[in-house]
Image (cartoon, rainbow over all chains, first blue to last red; front, side):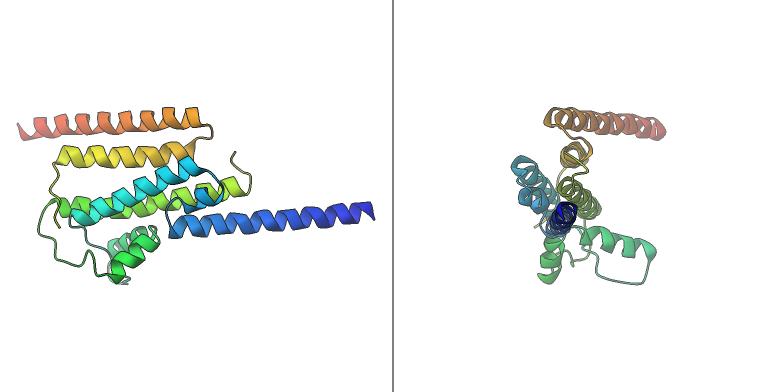
Length: 138
Length: 60
């Protein structure tokens, strides 16, 4: 009887941990740093939020092109996946029509790389938040 | 809204932000995070300076 109760309690705790892990992953993807903030890692969350947001905004200010969903060229598809890593930043930016102007200056290409890398770094940060939530990382 | 930064400023900004994320995600303790972030930043800078010299000698 005691063992059954302990098993049930352990299963409930595991289920809660898993749910928190996925919440941290999705929150971290949608809003940079939100996964860490959800886990009360305030400084890490704030630094991630500031870094990813600054990278994304600087990229747009440099005249970056935001990739749209496409099935044309492999590099364009990969660019879209990278951009999508920024979560809401990309979705809102794309919705507002940012990054649609034709590229006119050489730094615009750097801007596009800033935006793609911001997305990829955000994915790394979201996975890190998941690892913390499930106890894989202290 | 066109921000015209120099190539070097652009790469420094890129290195700062990328190093912060690498430091936070690849290490566990705060001290190790700072050290690894600084290490990544130094590597970025060293790579940029080395690549710049390589391009200089190719050009001349």
